[in-house]
Length: 299
Length: 117
Image 1 (cartoon, rainbow over the protein chains, first blue to last red):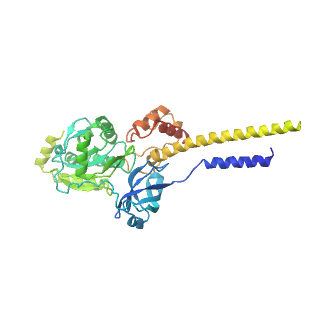
Image 2: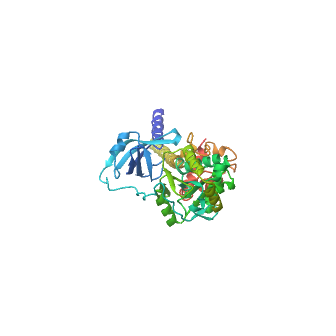
Image 3: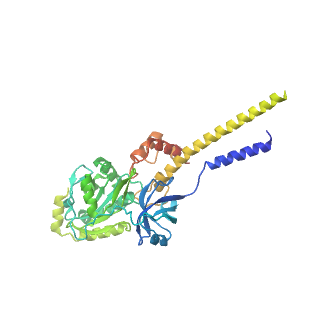
């Protein structure tokens, strides 16, 4: 075998070897638009598996070109490129192309039930907390309550882990002012009751409470039976549904007054500082009478 | 004599070609397994462990060199079994991947983590 032949052979092998490799942090997305939000420049897409980035699921994406959000409609099938920057911390859609408009106006995301309006009383449904104890929202009457929904296996850092992390920050800050700590309560409700049993919720809660179980007196982690959970979710406008081995869901935070009525909702745009300020403001409204009542009812 | 030499040359070529094909198959097979591990890492681990700064209570540790240390960031021994357990059950604020990744996926992921240096 002469040298030239060997070189060709080596080159051929190198080409074959290179063909088995792959590259870049841009991924192709194919899916169907379920909803759009012009104000936040987002579209919610029910997409197929994105190898190397994400399993098939429905979730909102920022779109680089705002004109696209104006143009697409729920039901449109699209192809786009997901650009993942900042080591996976930021991602958005570029080069969005509508591939099929025939489903337009016939497909919609599961419509959230008519949630309770500000001033309406919250439902007093039974929940099971991290200690396996039954609790009700009425137990916290006399305290301002900040409630949110999560599931402990949520792998998206900007969703449930962020919610729990920011609640932990609020909890830690409130703890520094005993008066506000006594007049407030945090409540994290899991919408995955099959997996998130009391022991799982306890372990999850302890991770956010620096392993200090005394924090459960001010921050409950709870779940409920499927029927009650659905009623609670509908009351607060939470949308969640199983998709593959994940749970697609909206992000919802509710502020409940010491009288047990809805004060305010947040979805995507919020900071822990804002939540804490509004919670403290509600707590400051607590009269000594209602405060005593609330303390007597909670654990 | 000449014919025998030619046959020997053809046989040699045949062996060389077979060897190259086998190498290529092994290499592609390894690359496919590695690619699967990398895909699983990018879609399940990187969003937290490779992110520069997240709005989380604790910044997830980088996983490069995970098996080069005697212990994991949790302090547990850096063994395949411990890493597998951590992936499935979660630890601290890290979510459990129980019922989300198959045993095969977890094995591919652990194998890929060994290569992260």
